[in-house]
Length: 380
Image (cartoon, rainbow, N blue to C red):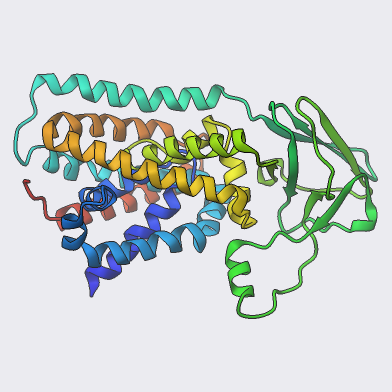
């Protein structure tokens, strides 16, 4: 029974990791020693699926729980305790290295040639991170405090028309519809968990905390819209979230499908963040907004692309594992090493956050080492 509960936990962590930019779901699979099982199932290999069917069922349940139910907890931790949270994941990653080495050397020993794929993997992750840091968001906003009022401007720097947008604040902000000047309304932005609970009862009433466009109000490419809230907004811009959606047409359908196809392949590559790839391709906020708002016009092409990417990516990785296992694991070691650089916290320094972060790192490392020691490594 314990192994099935652990499978649920692994799935939860994998699901959460895949919606956090900078954290690799593939790395978490390696950390918990279930990378081969999941990849084998994703190839649609019936023999592998039958062999691990119970594990996969419980893992799948955990992944759904992680994406839908627990993401808000991790989002809260990253927002309020970024150093400690990142260092905990760093501990998990560093602690998984012995298990990766055991997997890599189960049939062969490392040779000098392994340095090349290691460097390639390391450079790929660091390069992707630098690319992401240098990229610009195609939509953004700014707030101007006018004393008794606040002017908010939303910019569309993309080449597509924004058909809908929401700008959400933290719980301390209370917005009243009659105090808004502009083609804007407001509402309370229920979390996915609250919406699901609402299926079984009445949703609780909260003060509005989110602005949105009125029906028909769009933002053309290269344009912006401004509106004024007749009141002071005391909100941290880093905790303010702008999500947008575009009008669905054939090019946009294909764009979302191809983007999620690429991101899904990245999701199962250790050290590479699928969310990072979505941000690089400029679709991350659109996807998150669609999931939160149950926008199936966007979810459907995303799901098609994601499923195809997971299957094809898993098939490719499984093929490479069978042919060049040692080289593939050398690349994985490089990807994992690079992921430590990617999630290295910005607030690291001589402070309390870093001190408690080291405690979190040690805890994460101990968890990974314990899991690794209790994970059976088999030669194919």
